[in-house]
Image (cartoon, rainbow, N blue to C red):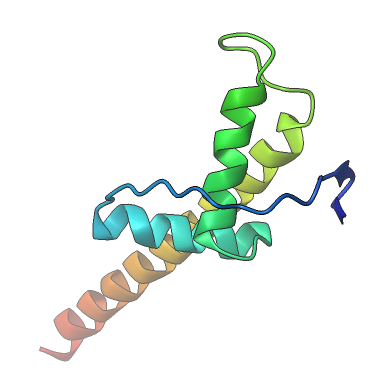
Length: 101
């Protein structure tokens, strides 16, 4: 089975790892997986884990890590744009309140 440009041997996944995250961390993960085109938060976490396990050496990114980092940066940029838009709305609302009152 091919995923993107990489071969992925289809193996049945029978083991499970469970971790707890804060609501904010979970929202960030949901936004990141959606922006990166992954199917789920689990798929995003699995890919991140595989990068860690397959990294050639400590601190040195794997060859295909550049694409992953770009997707991650794109997702973070999307979150930042959303936050800036929300802040702008608050500021504009405060300006209108001052001029109306």
